[in-house]
Length: 279
Image (cartoon, rainbow, N blue to C red; front, side, top):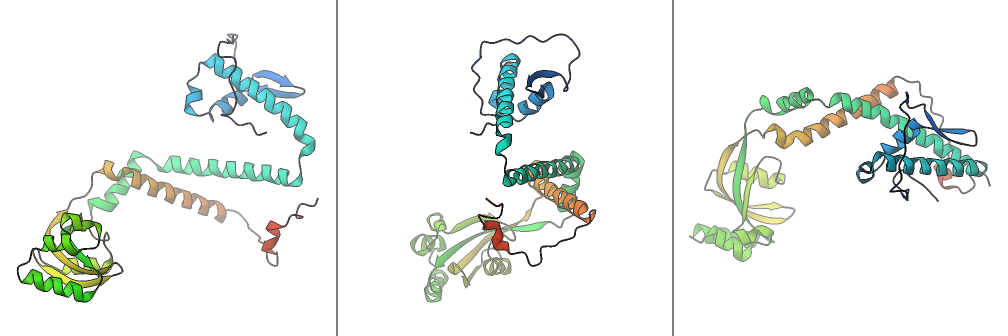
């Protein structure tokens, strides 16, 4: 049975717990299980891991529930000490290693994500960038070049582009007369984008082949792309700053240690061996 921070049942919802008005800190002992002390700090650390709904409980109810859980876990862990295998020992080492690594990365990320850093990242991307161009276009997508060429001839003869798109186009834009709305560089596959960029407003290009089929493209209009508001891209900038901070911290940590690898000749299949840890 596995107990975890959010898994205990609070059976004492009406209970109260009185605290002495004396100096108390993380080292204050609140219980002993045989020779193992349980401190106020143990309970506070466990509380920090609880889901939000548990953290809203009254302090006295939460205190008693956490204390009961830690007492139970301590008793069970003492009882299980004789059951620990080599695999268990290594798992505990891995868990501690992963936890400490996470602390290091959290520290770096916290230091990297400031309003000043976010503003600087925004300015670097948008403040000095040349204004881009956005395009408003429509297309007709069909399976063959011959069909596309035939439709283009009809359009040149006076047929309505949007109506032909509704009748013949094979993609979801057909219902809207082939309209693709506004899009910027990089949002369309390259052959399609190149064809759009080469057109002037009102012109029709194609047939153009992409992996989707054959296109006729009508460029309706263009406009200068405005830089997005900082708030609109804040999450994206934060994610980039976090990634950069994580990569920098990992590089700094690995560059600062001596690593001697001795994995040459080790059979990777041993990872799956049922006898790796003995019997």
